[in-house]
Image (cartoon, rainbow, N blue to C red; front, top):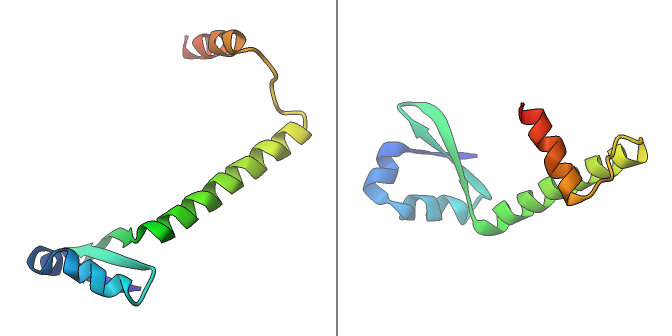
Length: 86
């Protein structure tokens, strides 16, 4: 994965990100020599979000199948949450 320094980003702006993302899905931005951020185009970001949501759905379905789910009304749910805050 290509690294863009913060200084390069300051001088070249978004053009420095665009040039990297034409060749790769992501780019690392380093600040004072340390990798700090990752940038990506929206298509890559949306693909990752879909994967994350599918993983959460799979986990929820597995927990329900194992009997760990709770079936309750909205009011019951809110009341249970209030008790947890206390």
